[in-house]
Amino acid sequence: MGDIALLANVSKPTVSRVLNNSPLVNEETRERVLRVAREHGYAINRNAQKLRQARNDTVAVVLDFGSHRAGRIADPFIFELLAGVSEALSVRNQDLLLSPPSLTDVQSHLDLISSRVADGFIFLGQGVREPMLRDLARAGAAFVVWGGVDPKEPYCSVGSDNRLGGQLAGELFVKRQAKRWLYVGNIAHSEIRMRYDGLCEVAATHGDVHVAHLDVEQMAYASTYQSMVAWLQKNPPPDAVFAFSDTAAIAIVAAFREFGLEAPTDYALCGYNNIPPAADFTPALTTIEQETHLAGAILVEKLMQILEGGKPKSSLLPTRLIVRQT
Image 1 (tube, one colour):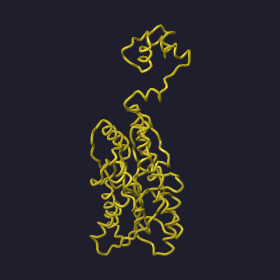
Image 2 (cartoon, rainbow, N blue to C red; image 1 turned 90 degrees about the horizontal axis):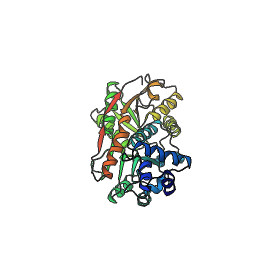
Image 3 (tube, rainbow, N blue to C red; image 1 turned 45 degrees about the horizontal axis):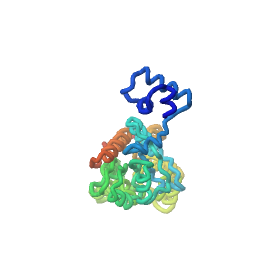
Image 4 (spheres, rainbow, N blue to C red; image 1 turned 135 degrees about the vertical axis):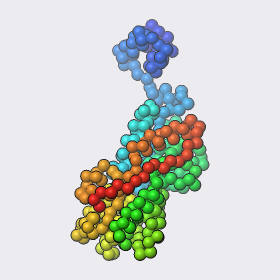
């Protein structure tokens, strides 16, 4: 920077102001400094620059690798969320760091903050990490979570009304006059459990309805398909199925076809998330919509509030049933 100042015949602080786009420098001086910097291949070392700031303007996004086989995440819903977070961070001139799967315990997260790699975290999905998230909140780390919203938890979360989503699916099945319901999903996950609870609440008000549960440990198409086929080989087919995601619902359609069963003729089917392919799939999926386009902006806004010393409350996003062919 000193060399650029000498060559441009300005002070070193002026070079710093120009390179940081300060309005205190006139246009002629700005152009001269930038021309000299370009001619000599000079650029700011952003990592070094961040060491002089209170924050480094980087947010770590943590995916739920543990819930996907061998760390492979392929659900379009996750990438819609990630895109929304990325866009919201870019508006605020924040960098996004995609955290590695090895980041699993409280200390590894705290180390990332103390080493000034990131200012805070956005967790896309609680998975089965709730105990770790509670401990991380008690340790004072700055983070927000996309997932099941529970007022009893000590951290800020954003998500759809998962219990209401389950109730909406149940009410749809009642209208369909279905009696043998099947819920597909790993209820060790907070948000997936809430959907199951909502479904069961509706079933409980109708004494002739029975709800079975198929646990799918890995949240992926292949594992859902295999689990559904194995279940159908041992059990009579249900007349209504509520899947934890639209990707799972698509896998369920394929599994039922192995037994000559089609939705909606032989069973009603409801997914969750309303991913873009849901409307174009054959048959078009009935699903519970989460307004993902709002989620990224809200998650980033709440994390920024925490970083600035605020204590934002958790938020429930609008949740509605989208009725299509299944």
